[in-house]
Length: 218
Ligand code: URA
Image (cartoon, rainbow, N blue to C red; front, side, top):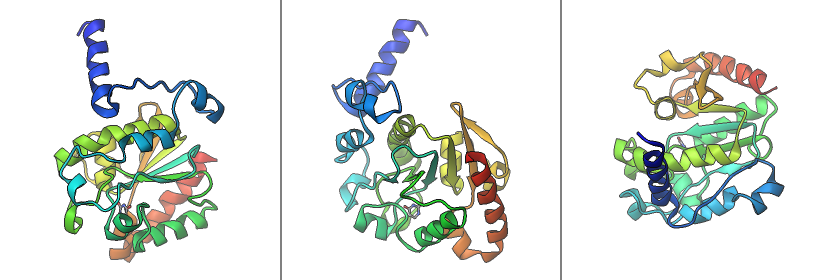
């Protein structure tokens, strides 16, 4: 493709996501984001009424993300469940409470140094798996969150998040315990907290993962 075609393609994709405003994001430092770029909150505001897929019609909340906007650690789950849909905040149900306990055990919390979001921002009815078409529409939002937060490490919670971010069709077992590379940012995959609630036997391995995660961001 020629440079001109590449630029056209990029502008078209940007227009699909943000409309007719052209945004620039030069630096992570918040003092620059006011002048030169736009903030995570501004991005959130620009997409919160999204109707790009059918989930827009059934959701109660657009669950954008929560936590430290300058986080070193970004945790990515699958999709909001019922409680998250009601409250508009990711990981607030049983799985979320377990996630908070795990974070606290490695001296982290969602308020400090950690940001939490999902691959898709709206609840699939009856918590069914997100459809590939829904993931395809929503993934650019996740990419832009990563671009704005610029974490030191991304952790994919569960297979859906891992295979979306790594663009493969591997099992979680194959993706675990490997330091992957997401456009220059280290990425590791571990069990989804809901899987740990279903199967206690996975907890020791998950604990190993989180101790490793703690080391990777130290
Ligand atoms: N499971 C997820 O993947 N995300 C949430 O926000 C809640 C449960």
